[in-house]
Length: 341
Ligand code: UDP
Ligand code: MG
Image (cartoon, rainbow, N blue to C red; front, side):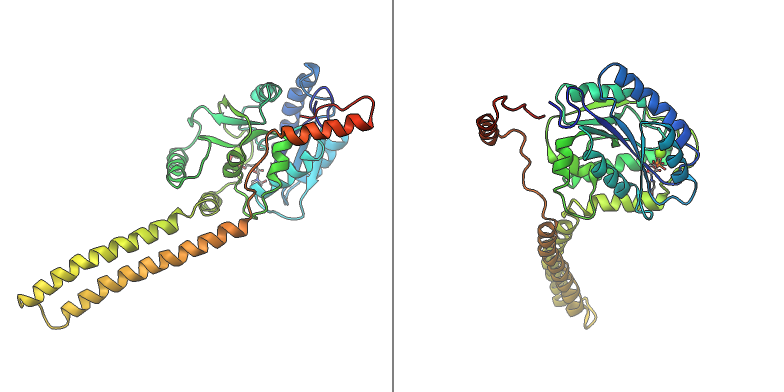
């Protein structure tokens, strides 16, 4: 059965917070209600927790978390020493939560993502899914700019061969064993939205409507959004380098055409002196340089992939070791062993 929770799984809801004093009371109240219902329905264990990760907030965020953890059995806090950004704060929370729970749901503190579907997440987990992606039905609550840039981004990532779940951000459920696999990724720029689909395992999607922030302001200004988008591309894809190589080869081929053209012009006497040699060298050397840069880039991208030391596979079921483990256990104990999820 479940690793920690016995008959019912222990759930941890991980919530990164950066200067979220305006929303925390309401967030805890709303999520506690969902949690109580799940426990009453015996879908999750009464040991389940809400884990707030304070990402180096400068306001009263940590104080509120401390107060709440004293008043509310579900609430636990994790305080980071400084602001490390949403993705890193989330990772810290996932790591700590995975040590105490069978499944973890990550959600933003402003509850823009619809928490009524948490029950559906858990039901899907009970059906044997290791990953449940929360996917937005539409982007009607987004600004015109955000909607279009997001769409462009998904297209761009797809073109670069990065497998992302369309309209899914960081609202998702992960089982304990997915989190164990996740911990094998040692790269420091961990782009979760790209990594999770890479891990594999049985997964499904749950659709929901995203609301407006109920209080406070977005902690993701345009600058952070752009750097996050860039991070996503450069930590996953070497396609930009390959494009450079291709452009280089294209220019080199083009230089052959321009060479013929320049020579014909010279023979026909339609040039001033020096033009032909200038034309020949600009196109040819330009092409060679671009191609050379691309070629160096190809080697660098190999180094970059090696340095990441990504795990090469993730085992779903291993009947060989499982059978052996069971045989060992039944040899040593008369009761035998219980299977683990
Ligand atoms: N957040 C964080 N560290 C940061 C920025 C944001 O932990 O440096 C948290 C924030 O408190 C929230 C989540 O990340 O829980 C998403 O941020 P926000 O709602 O402001 O982003 P938006 O929904 O506007 O994209
Ligand atoms: Mg938000």
